[in-house]
Length: 351
Ligand code: HPA
Ligand code: ZN
Image (cartoon, rainbow, N blue to C red):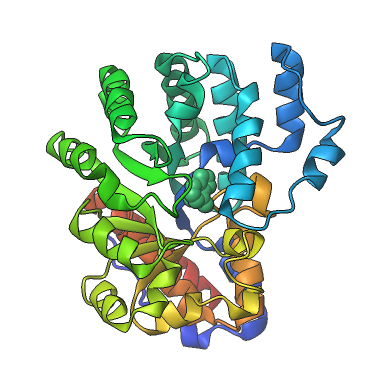
């Protein structure tokens, strides 16, 4: 193995920080692929599939993206996904995201998808998983972006519905690496899905869940203790609970934080008040991710650039964030070591 130079974030001049944020290799661990559907592609697919949209133009649709909380976003996000009908539609959506990922030096991505949003409209599971998986396979070969899929259960639906969805997906078990939990958080605590998550763990699936985006620290505790998740998606409300913060730091639980999402859904009043820097400085394994980039104003590098500009984080934070993204990703030890070596090389070249 080739030895790598140690990272030297303290030696990197401040004016080189934006270029470094863009250039450094990183993993994206929190992206809902349906949330990467840009208004232009929504209109293109609507036309291709003969789906009527309640918006007159791309501009009118984009103008409706003024959210007050998570639910106000979800209503429009599920409406946008209604144009996805054919295998090619799912491929086109994922391919567009993977091209953007490559441009942002995202070398590894774990994509959430919401099968219930599609199967409830009569789209077969095979169509959904087939198109997304084909894009992931092609990205590995043609873009050098390593991508895998995580099937999310919609938490506003029943646990029984989640079990049925899992059953429908199991013929394609080799095409997704794990399961997650998303949609409306308040009133739908993790423990509602205790049995289906236990079943998934028994099948050898990796497990993650959204918790502490809008919901209380108690939801983060139960995601860890009842669902036994390996990562917490969002988790920013952990800052309200000092004992939870200590646990997350001690156990190095990865938090997949999404700053522009939190801003657009009014979780924080402005980016300068976002707590990502506080989480990192307290020793938590936080990462930066885009969540639903077509709706929240930016892909990975925009999230990094805007968050660093607003919070005054430095190159040391940049190194921690990128390193945490590889440490928290569901890859094998050899790939992790390779990515971290690439990260160290990038930092050395900027010093
Ligand atoms: N939170 C919960 N569910 C979601 C989100 C989110 O930010 N994005 C897409 N589904
Ligand atoms: Zn999310």
